[in-house]
Image (cartoon, rainbow, N blue to C red; front, side, top):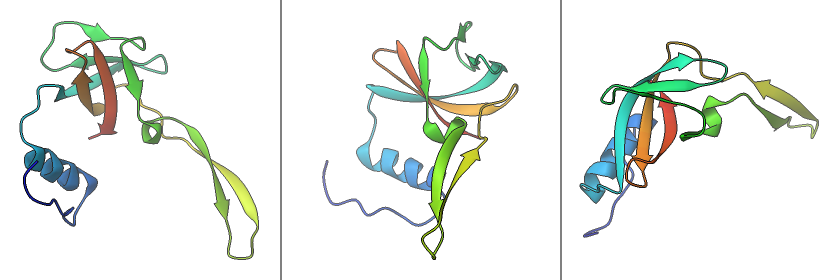
Length: 110
């Protein structure tokens, strides 16, 4: 990779786009758009394929799953908070495909 890459300011999407542009074309990973067609047992229909992916085909980024985080107040008190961020029917998503399009990672809701 020639030169040094400095992460630009802006949204996470803008930063991801800039990083991909810097690295250049890489068929090892491809990015696609899709729609959640079933929830809570997630199924996703990618825009460019005639079939749906089920939960055995993909992983989901933590930020798109319900999860618990621990917050610490300035006084030292800690509290656990559940973040309800699960994918819902009809959500549009960005999906990375890899391993010769045999495996997928749902990266973001758009």
